[in-house]
Image (cartoon, rainbow, N blue to C red; front, top):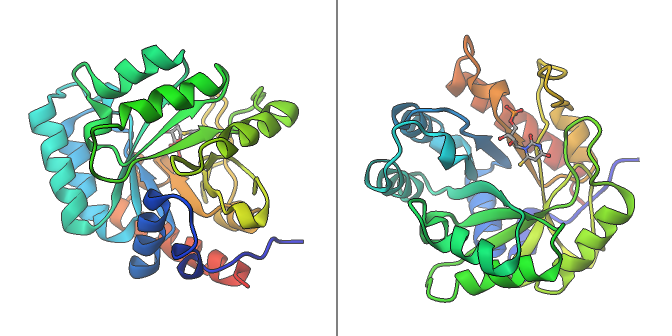
Length: 263
Ligand code: S5P
């Protein structure tokens, strides 16, 4: 039977993570649980989508290392400006997977300086507690809220992140709930009163897969299974699709599925 959960609005006051509280407030105010994955390869496309789809989303997810003409000044500065104008959070889908000391440098330094601008980033649990400690240490001098999602399950066919690995990932998140506010997952994880935020990729209304292992579920399947935020990429911006119309469609489907699930 489908999971019932508290309303986003009722979770704002009680959530342990400041970043999650800010996110739940945005979702409530804008009536959207849609995260669009901006997997494009030029800055113009990225910024155009961020501007035109901004009103419909709570979060924009980026893979900033795939932008051909990337510079901090020409990509990050305007993206942060758009995030303020349209009131969305930025999620750099970096999938950190190294020892604490290395991920701390990858998070804070180089040409991307992810911690400076990405409200959310994510990491694999594989290396153990040091990865969370290293990333958390990287937020030390940042005054704005920052949050981490652990990859507890993946959408791809044959994923190894199942069973015991998933359970141990949840345990790892429990060690630092101020910073680790949720999971990339396909199912509800953690106890109800822990209130982890579940963000779910592999959502598509028109496709079943992409020929490279991606698997799509419908919005209803994802949300009734316990997802708080649906992540949609090519379902919205693939060639031939009207990204604005598709964003409205996924936002409506996501909100309807959420309303049906809420207590
Ligand atoms: O398990 C996962 C985790 C992630 S973060 N499966 C995924 O597909 N993702 C990401 O979500 C992936 O890197 C891509 O950016 C997005 C899905 O894109 P789509 O075009 O298939 O919707």
